[in-house]
Image 1 (cartoon, rainbow, N blue to C red):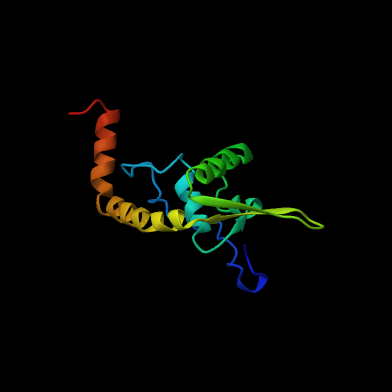
Image 2 (cartoon, rainbow, N blue to C red):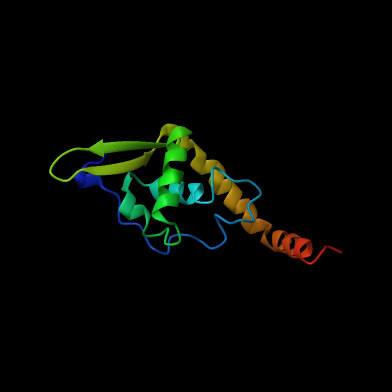
Length: 129
């Protein structure tokens, strides 16, 4: 899956903008971690341990479940490498790559409507008015 000479740069632990992916985005792909995982894989295949760096709040169990779900849905491919040290890498499939553009659009829409979304959410928590 990867060539050692073309491996992507390490993931930035602070790579996620607090605005997006956000619970305020009006739709969700998969579970709460799915879009974050897709973003982690956008520059190339990653190992499980690499994914945990920017996804600090995810448990190993939740990350495993999310990756399996993304694999079943056709967005992520899992490849095992045998050898002295067995390793597994996850990569976006063409279907997963195709989802990045719509995710970008959803994040941009959320940024543009952030104040309105916050106001609506606060109104619903306070009983509306």
